[in-house]
Length: 219
Figure 1 (tube, rainbow, N blue to C red):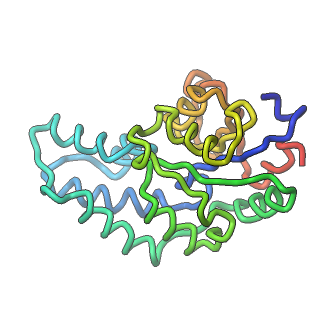
Figure 2: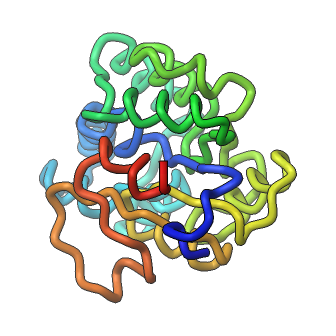
């Protein structure tokens, strides 16, 4: 969809790294958790490996190294993450202003993330963004396939009664860009500090300042 010619009928935001700056906290907790299993990796390596990934990628990483996670690790880990996020999360600069402008223009908004709904709720509430997305949050866990599969984006579009070609996705990870591409949706790549190769963008348009998003949508 040529955004300059047609205002979207739905804007789908990823959550972590797009609306809220929760990834540093999440990665610190994950790094500590992985070290407790005997894994040997730096915090930087942890970030590079797991940004935009799912719990299955974590399980695969641990298993491939002959290590083991506790039987009930997902719940234990996410409890630690949620506890940390209740005191350590901030909005992405310009996100609140962009969301407010898009919403005031009458364009529906939603969130579609690889993360759990409980995590989205906590981070959006803590950053003052929840009111725009209450009841409009969709998790890859609920559709059975994580990004780069397109399922969560297609589910979000279906739940809002909008055709994929009339949606715009805002993402920050390669798996998210690929998921939007696989869903045949226009995508903006929020990469303020990351130097990515064109192939990594999967046709997404670079966005370096979230405050510019409404203008790029023709608002």
